[in-house]
Length: 264
Image (cartoon, rainbow, N blue to C red; front, side):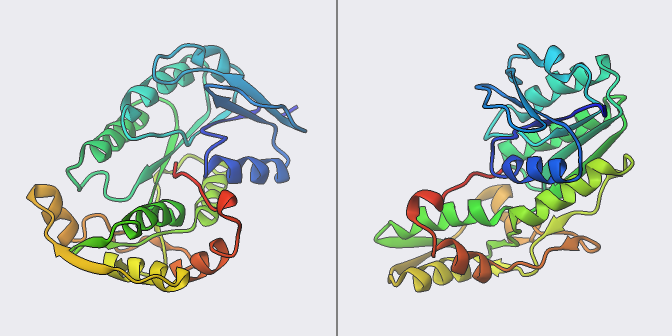
């Protein structure tokens, strides 16, 4: 039997899409999470805590490939180092990591954490592939929903996003995981760049609301980086197909309880 592919973050927005794709390709999957889950055909669940390192070694043992999709607002570099050390001890053949476009250019703490996680993967001694993906449509929707609840919506001038569909990122992650280690892969972003005001307008139009807008200026080095477009994909990036408008049309037809998700 083939060695299982270990997926961290297998119960998150991206992981829930990746796991069935791996199964469809005929690979056994092991999902690492802090709470575990119900086993399914060809899918086992293991419990470990990447932030403390507890249980990570036995979770990784025997895996041939590791897809590191777990992430959060802080601590990514710590979690990744624990995973990297376990992967090296387990003689993992391929470590695949999803990062964020702009991790090396935008001076925000959570992006620095992603950058440091990238460095841990690259310096692990394990053959590796890293994909930097743009912000998912799901996370963009969560952001504009929160903004639209305010009586006056603050709109940072010059802030642009290039949101990408999570299903397209999942398909690319599986393709990379099943291929040879490639180092830093071409970035993946959505087909269009939108000003934040466009994204908010699209959402408000779709839900039939009106809100006053208040232009604001993002301060400091981070604001300058966003105005420079340092969070946008570089030339040569792979661009997805599904637009923000198509995502909204589909998502807003669903019941509210099914319309939420988190990014990786």
